[in-house]
Amino acid sequence: MLVAALSRTRIRTYALVIGVVLIVVLAVPARNRLRLTFALQRARAALRDRQLGEAVETLNTLNRTHPERSDVCYLLGVAHRRLGQFDQSFEYLQQAEELGWRLSDVTRQRYLARFQAGEIESTQGYLYTLLQGGTDDVMAAEIYETLTQGYLKEARVVDSIVVLDHWIEWQPNAVYPRFLRAKLNEMFGGYDWAAGVENYRKILEIDSSHVEAHLGLARALFKSQKVEAAQKEYLKIRQASPDHPLAMLGLARCQQRLGKSSDAVELFEGVTSADIDRRHRAEAWAALGQIALANSDFERAVECFESALEENPRQVQTHHLLGTTYSRLGQDGKAQQHIERSQEVLAKNQRMSELADEITTEPTDLAPRMEMAQLLIESDDPKAAITWLQTVIHIDPLHVEARQTLADLFTELGVHDVAAGHRSFVRQAGQVPASPSPTE
Image (cartoon, rainbow, N blue to C red; front, side, top):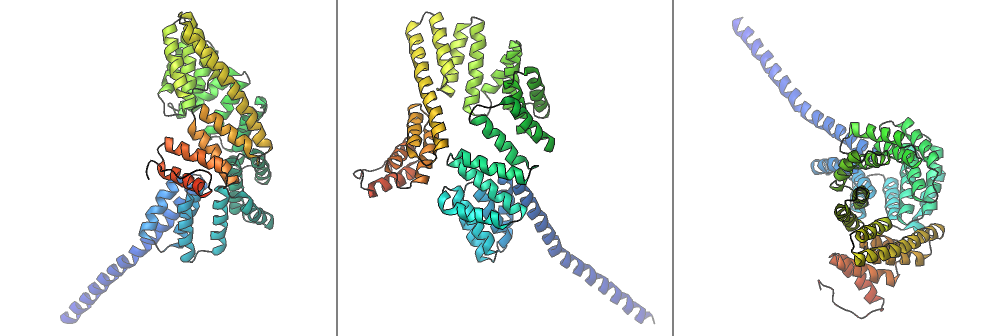
């Protein structure tokens, strides 16, 4: 009996051990599947929230551990397309198709990528057909977003606004189209800032944490001469993000307007060293120069105005004020130089404003785009000139003058491989004799 009891005990022990081992063995793949599911959910949420870099990082990790997953490759194709990285997008979409992802989805993404890349005329019909044929909400939002961005990239502002209006009509509580529509209203044409206040307040009713909408509301209030109300909005932003450079700049403007110069100076000085667009740093330097000039600190004013023009040489008022300051210091030669420069810049700025209106009205006319690029080159802004020249070759890939100018600009910027590509095109067109590039 004792032997039998011991045998039964051993059997139960072995069964228990085997059971534990089976649980562990089966739990590992279950845990891996759970991790995969959570990671995919995180990537999709990042795509939904337009956190594209975060989405790519998560998906790259998944692709390394699960290279057989067609959904991971497909989402990588989507993320890279939305980032404007079309070569990578096409590569991942091809992998997704080969791994068995739905061809209809892959085809749609390829058309969206081509539209974003500038192939508007050959792709927009397909995308509008999808919208008219009825799609789910996610797909429709994806198409509306791409249409808006593609038209904007080609400076077809009116077309972008039409798309946004349809999008808002379809999804009145969608924040992204409302915000972009409000921004476009600010950028083009005479803007009704009181209407802007209402536009941004509507966005904040939908999403009270939208920082850019808070900035827009503060800016609209300031432009509507409601300086104290604007000040309160900027302070709200700084409570959540004390070092937000645009909130610092906006609050500094308010303090300056309210006569609190010492507070304004501290804020403007913070902006001059912030990681922010050079135009905003230029504005801060110019404001510091104005405060110094008002205090008859002419040498400090010169220093600030010169710094402003280093950041943005197209500031008409700053050239004029610098000329005035040099005159106060008895340096009439420099004073005259900057007064004349202010007049030249004013004329160019006015012409660029006229060209922007012409391009908006006649988006397929290439002459205003070429003139805009030339004015930007003369204004020492080659990157902006390149942007306009690229819109020209998107509309007319055979435009030799645009290609030659792009080759010259990319050479000056040291991007020799891109320059060589444009130069090769020009040579093949037979417009100029072959000449070696710096890297040939």
